[in-house]
Image (cartoon, rainbow, N blue to C red; front, side, top):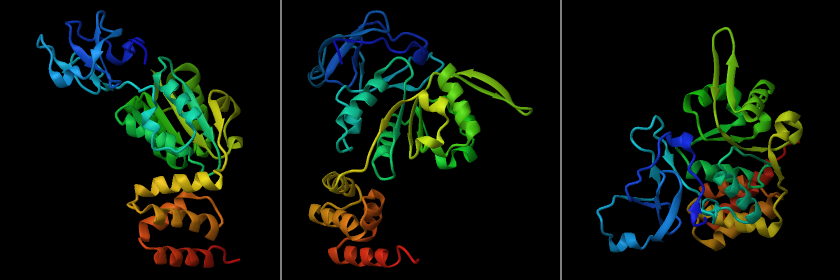
Length: 299
C-alpha cells in the first residue's frame, strides 16, 4: 500500500469521510488523514494508538464505516498488499497476488479458477467470503439455479459475487451472469417481474470443466488453470488443513495424508478431512482406510 491510498469508491459511501483531522487506521500499520474526504495520506505509525494522541480526535480502528448519513452502511475494508487473507492456503503465491490486485481494484474484475476436485481452488473463494462477509454473496453453483441466485443478487447487491462450480449453473443463469459482467447491470424480464439495476460487482468463480461454461462468459474472466498437487504439496496442505479439524499432532495428520495418498491412491483433501473428523488415533485411521478400500468399488 503506497503513501497515498487510491481514492475510496465513492459509490460505496456516497458522501466523503470527515475532514476534521480524524485519524484512520487502515490496517497496514500506518495512520492516515484525509483532506478531501476521499484520498488518504500517511501521518505516522499505528503505534501512536498505543501511546495516545492529542487533539481529542476519534480513532477509527481496523475497518472504516461509512458516514451515518449514507444510504449504504456496509463497511469499507481495505485489502493488505501482503495478501494475508490467503495465509491459510499453501503455495500459489503468484495467484494470491493476482487476487489481491483484483480486490484492490477500483473497477470490477472477474477471476476464474479451473481445475479438478481437490486442487484447492475453492479455498480462495472461501477466504474472500470469510474476509468480507458483509460484502460477499457466496453461491454453490450445484444448487445455484434452484436457489434463484439473481433474486439474491437483487436483494443483497454484494460487492463480491463468489460462485463455486460455475460450470454447474444452467445456461440461462450463465447468460444472465455474462450480461451482468458485460454491462454492469442486473436485468430480469418476465411476466411476473421486471427490473434493470446497476450493479458494480466483482465475480470470483471456480469450475471443474471449462467445456460446461458458455464461451462468452468464459471470455469475461481472467482464467487460471490449476493442476493436481504433487505428493509433497498434498501432504503439506493436508497437515495444515487438518489442524483446523483438531488434529494438532503433526505426525498423525501426516499419517492421515499418507493413508489417503497411498492407501486410497488419490489426492483428495476431502477424504483426509472426513477421516480426521472421525479418527483420533493411528489405529482408527488404518481401520477406516481399510474399510473405505474394501467398499470403494463393488464392481
